[in-house]
Image 1 (cartoon, rainbow, N blue to C red):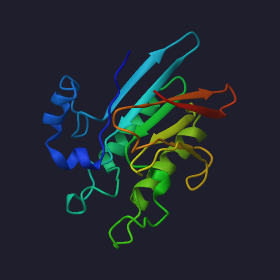
Image 2: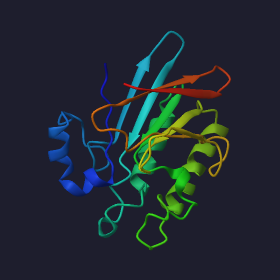
Image 3: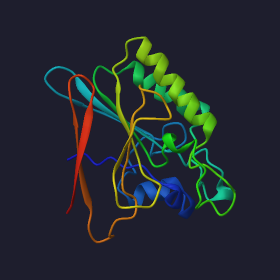
Image 4: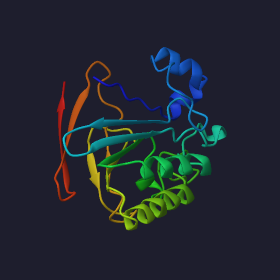
Length: 198
């Protein structure tokens, strides 16, 4: 089974990415746009392939704020665009911080009134996806993200337009157990998920 990992703000502040990659057995990952946690992997199947693009949203974030607010820098955005150019099937984006949270002030941001994601980065990502979809790129099914502590999985369709749906995954479940999330994508582009504690 493939192991796909991206890191969150606490991981990014704890140690250097190369050390973290080694501990998490990702030390052989190529460093893409400054991070071994920017990855792309395709799984071929009968008609096309399914691609996962994992994005390190703490890389360009402000360490003075513990990388609390996620961000996608210009070079990373260009890399995502090049990956989308080489996609022949469904594509999932996965990242720790959720671009869908760029427009909601977070009460947990220590009174700073931060959102969980840079507005400019979220809008740039949404524009990129809109342009790619107009050019006939396969759709994004959907953006998977965490960051916000909680036990529940939520489907998000608003904020970034119809071409960039999201699933917010649980980020503070019982540490001795995990949660299995199965995402089902229909041919027409609709999707749903099922979750179970394991």
